[in-house]
Image (cartoon, rainbow, N blue to C red; front, side, top):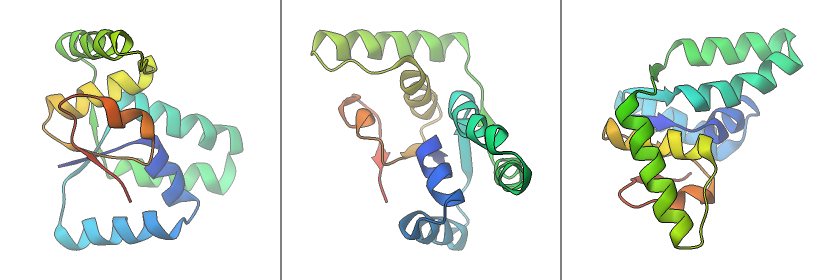
Length: 128
């Protein structure tokens, strides 16, 4: 399973060639796609702001994704990861911690171009 970060969804909506090519590849492979609830919120804030056709496209895209909820164990893991990263002097934002922990919990590869995820232990990060 692939867990899509908001950066991937935004790039896909903006027609970024690398994101489009990765989406086509995942479709050909029949890959199961998901998005963590915080990434869904990040992506849709901009879509609701822009409204109109952009919002309709964003809602259509996310309607095909499995939404990964944030549960207590995921929240605790996100906090643990955040503490580890902070001790190393590499703090990570709360939303990104929740996204990473959700992906890890579901044994999903996180698809993102956000470099903040690179230092998260045990996370399988895939770029495009």
